Length: 355
Image 1 (cartoon, rainbow, N blue to C red):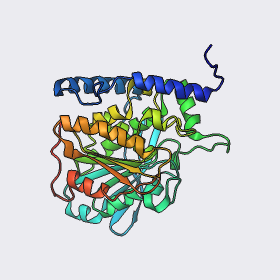
Image 2 (image 1 turned 30 degrees about the vertical axis):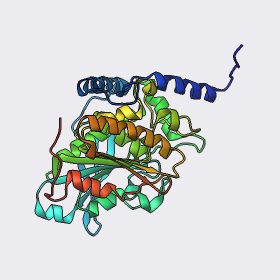
Image 3 (image 1 turned 180 degrees about the horizontal axis):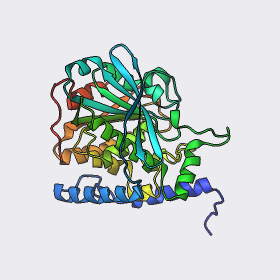
């Protein structure tokens, strides 16, 4: 008789290993990209799987963007804005507008900058430290001083969108439970809100809709990977401290939460397939050698598979992997030149939109 198991955690670890190994892949059995026609067919299948995993999404409503207040932060203006994303939900955000862009009046590149776990948009805007490393993670602020129009929204349960919870209740998991009762998933709702954030940027007079990028660390990296895979309006993406493999990162104790998962996603798509759906658009992955929740080894394995995909599509130069000495944090050393290369700044060279 086989050894009996009583542990729900051990059940998950064993089940995760089984379902991820059986999930359909964009690569062949040898780990190589198939011929281009077959690869494109597998990518179409992966896109259908992602759409199915997202499940029910809200009905759209007019954005009704409102500026609540504005603060001069030296090289740029910080607008505190709010916009509607569905019947009973609005999103507060900071919109960072460089003064030189405003003075020129010409549309140019923009970035959707997504925070991770912590205080919310204030961290990425350099206004507060957070769970993921403090001032090093002020990438919205850093992008604005480099000339980008930047939108930094609060995700559900964070920042201005946080509800009061008792100390023994974790908001991500609590909100996931209530969303599931009415047929929704928290990550899918966050992605819906972020897609509406792309609408905000695309409609701004200083933004070229064909030059919008997205960046994020940790949970922000989750959102960046999933949204870039789902919404082709993200023209270049930087996924920091997240891209990995389900059988590596999800089987680390207490690592996943209700804001980072979709029902049955490990049976449908691994991080490799999500990254492959970003192709042929530029993708940079940041991985810290000391990151103990999204280990660099898992990231290297997935990026190796992505190199097969990008190479087969003839765009190998659009995929980069920055493996840096450090832990679970934003690095940025290669991210800023990467975005400048593919999105441009103030009229410099940028990527021609691909289908």
